[in-house]
Structures are given as structure tokens and as C-alpha cells.
Amino acid sequence: MSNFEHRVVDDTEVLHLLNQLVKMCTDIFCPSSTHHYFGFNSRLWGYLDITKVTFEGACFLAICIYSLKNRKLYWVKIFSTDLEMHIDPHSDPKAWESYFKSIVWLHYKPANCCDLPDSHGGDFGLECYTLNGHVFQCYLPEQSSDVDKLYKAQQKKIYNDIQKFSKDNVKQLEELFGTLKISRWILATPYNKSAKLSQYCTKKSLKVRQLGISYVADDFQIIVQTESSYSQEAFLLRRDSYQLSLNLDDTTVEGAMEFISYNSSFLEKLNLKLPKIHDVISRQEQIRNFLIQKFLDYQNLLDTLKKNWVDIYEIVYKCIQQRESNLVGMFMLAPSNAQPSRIMTDQIESLKKCIEEEVPTFKQADLEKITWGVISDWLIRCPLDF
Image 1 (cartoon, helix red, strand yellow):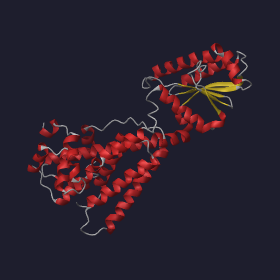
Image 2: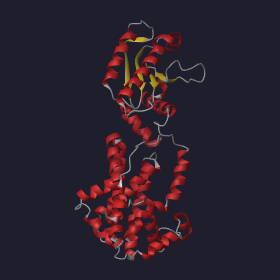
Image 3: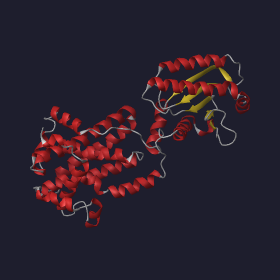
Image 4: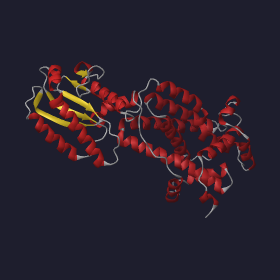
């Protein structure tokens, strides 16, 4: 087995190499005042002994590190924004309750919604209700991967809270609802994976109807709803107020190598650039793997957005397409001595600003995936010979 096969490329090591080459670019991206942040220590200088690149090649590599150029400022911006942004709704029960109440308020409008705070005498087993007769109880399960356990947990939640709704709190609810008839009791939960749960809801609904409770409508029904039941409202909240939670796994080196082995023709343009970055084959392979990992992470993120948040996907995709179109135009009109790295980084920076403005709720890590992914994608497909 070769030394390369034994060795897994480390993001930090690759970035050290990129940092060194950026330094060779005479402060194209990083003024001298920022050198301390990237940590140009003695280890980095060692790369000069094995690195043979042209100035253009260094510029080419410099575009790969543009995101780190502004990372410190970006962290500051995200930190301050997070203070105004709600956390991931799936992070804890209270966050989920707040999130789904926001969905209800958007859907039914504030004048038709009644909140039930639990700080003074309890909430009577309900989070809120609407004046058209819908009541909501929020529930964030501890896990969702085991469908049988999820079903049992949700079933237990329905059983316990319907007990409160139809027996324990009848007197309090009669005073609360007055002449209002409740036609829907809704379990608001992030996951609905079992048809058996719907069967259970129907069974319990029929039993509640038979109790003759004054506030229960003749067509009373227990149902399970998720945020996808209110796609437009969820989109608005995820875009503007609540942090997107994509929970994506990073591509492994092995996954990148497998992709490379089956897509050699797709990577021809990138392969032509690699010798200009480094003349050692093993190092070329490591850098290629690094870029392919970022490319695959990016594709996975786009696929997830397209599947679960198509409106946000369309916003992100439109931003990317606009920047790519501008990039092509800039290269067509640029003078012969123009620096490709400067043109590309300007467009990438504009892309980042566009996404931050349009969808301010992206996590930092997911924005980084988009950043690196677009860079890798352009390097793979770009026909220019740097």
C-alpha cells in the first residue's frame, strides 16, 4: 500500500499550504496585519522547500482560501446576528414550541390565535388555540430514527394530553372555550412516520366524541401535523428568523476517492490545473481529494435543500447562477493581465453577501459548505488554464 493510501489529508494541512501560497501572492488577499490570524509559523515556511508554483498558480490556489480571508469578520457578524435569531427549532422542546406557535400565528393571523402561557396555573394541557376551533399541543421527541419507538412515544403523548383535554381539565376548558366548539386537536411534532399513529388518532377521536363534552364538535378529530403541513409559513420563518438545521455528514476521503475513480472525465479540467499547483503527485492527489470532498458536501447540501426546503434552494441556486453569469462576463471583458483569482474572489464574496441577505438563517458551517462547494465546482468546470 502506498504512503498516500495510509495518509488521510487534513483540512488544516491543506489550508496551511494554501496560506503559504497566498502569502507568496504579495498580499492579494491578506494584508500584513492579518498574517498573525492565519498563523504563519515555522512549519509553514517549510512548504517553500517543496513548493514550485508560478505566480499565476499561487493566485489560482488563493481563490480556494478566500473564505478564510474574511472568516474572522464573518464570525463577528454571525455572532451578533445570532443574538437576534432564534435557535434551531429542533434543539429543545421550548424552541420547538416557540417555532410552531409562530407558524400558527402566521397561518391563522394573530387576531384569531390565543396563547396559553403555563406560568400561572398551567396551560390546561394545550399550547394555544384558534377561534375557528383548532387546538395545538407541541411535542419534540427525543429521537426519530427508530420509527417504532417514535410511534410509541407520540402515541403516549397523545394519550396523556387527550386525557387532560377530555377528562382532567374539562371544567377549566369549558370556562376557557365558552361557546367555541373544538373540531381539531393537533399534535404539532417534527416527525410523522407511522400510519398506525393516524389509526390511533381516529380511534381516540371517536371515543372523545362519545363523551358529550360541551366544547367538542361533532366532527372532532385528532390529527398529527409537522412544519411541512405549513410549508409557506415554515419557509418564511426558516428564511428570516429560525436557524436552518440541515444536519449533513461530511464527505470522507474514501468517498471522494470513489467519486474520482468513477468520474475521471468530469475532472479533466481540474486535473490539468493540479501540476501547476504542485509537482509532487501525492500532493496533487491530496489537494484533489480535498476539493472533491468540498464539492460533494456542497452537492449534498443542495440536494437536501431541494428536497426539504425547495423555496430556499431556489433562492440559493439563483444567487449562484447570477454570480456564475457575472463571472463569465468578467472573464470575457477582463484585460489580458487581469488576475483570475481577484475576479473569482470578488464574485464569490458577492455570492456570500447575496445568500446572507436573502437567507440570514444559514448556520456558519453550512455557509462554509456553499462557499467551498462553489469554489470547487468552478475549479472543476472552469475551462481557463491558470
